[in-house]
Length: 88
Image (cartoon, rainbow, N blue to C red):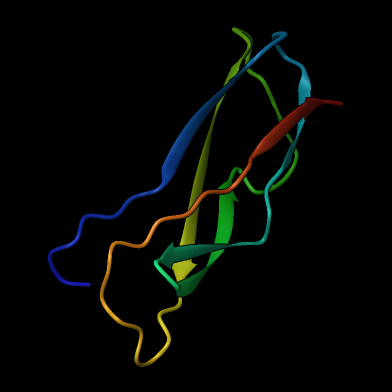
């Protein structure tokens, strides 16, 4: 959409250095504005298995593809998702 800023979410996972971590992210989320909703398909980087670095951190980025159905009214759409990290 012209004139709108967009970007991916950035998270920093911290823990035991050089440890493998499993990340779980839902495949999609829903943005809502009042009773209106718009689906978004989520993706993360890195996409596969990952490990924390030697200092015990790892940056994770979450982005998505917003699919705006025809006739969707304008509004301030918002939503949330849960990214879960667990040691392997």
